[in-house]
Image 1: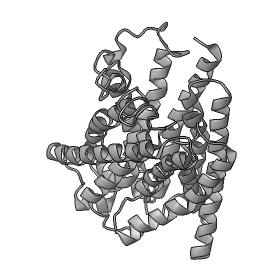
Image 2: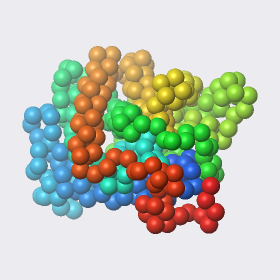
Image 3: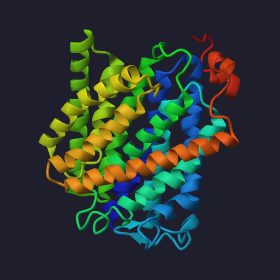
Image 4: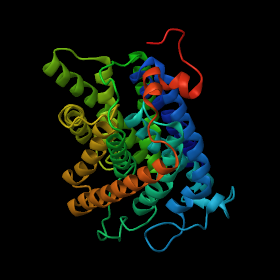
Length: 393
């Protein structure tokens, strides 16, 4: 065990949980109507709790167990069987590696929340999220990070898929799942209401930015120069994408908005995530500059051209950003084109199929969408018996 590595990953684990609670909850909560903000908080919080238990029970062993087929890790480490405080994973206590990876298993299904806010059943959220994490996210983790079929020496030869912190594992999977659910749900009855609390959106985005240092820097799994570079390029990409989004918004619409610039931040963060361990500051500038414009155009395509109500633009920002960053690894020569594009294709098709099946299956057990009256009145009071404000717009 290395003390410095252990100390840093303890901090990184806290930072990644901070991204979800309260960062993502505030970011998403501020973007919805006032009558639905608590439902968003409840969905994100409930997912965080449920994923923690499921990761302990089955998720970790599926992702990082000693499976030999390349498809999944098996069940040898259910409930951390055989793992003690002295067990090691590299230079870290294995229980710490478990906890760090647990925070990724929490935020990935929580990202999907943005696609279905204001109209989805809470029971469906929990049932779908739990099954999706176990049957989609955890196997993909094993394929790429757990030594499975997409890692080095696997399906794409000695140089496997390069995904430092989750461009494919987190952002592509969550983005595709979000798009699928949005299509099955259909649009909200009123899609024109602006965000009720842009200040929440700003605070949540700022928390996500800070937490992302643990997300990407922690993925080095060591306190060294690689972690420092990952942290640095993460910041550069986020800053650059914020400005390129705002500039593009100003050129197109005449004004640069607060919600726009912080959405650009998230686009830059998602885009640098897979490449953060393989590029330097100049490459990060390029990735961020392109991401701010690319993801904004993806928002327009999904929302306006295709008419899909991916309410908070999960696919356009996270999905497109993660895919773009994964491709840029090949562009900058840190990975092979065959492995990067092949990995995107394999995981994309797998995620699409599993998500469609789970949406249909879960819909047979608990309603996918709330009734029309609940949607009009808001989920906060009708579903959860509370409201955030005395006066609800």
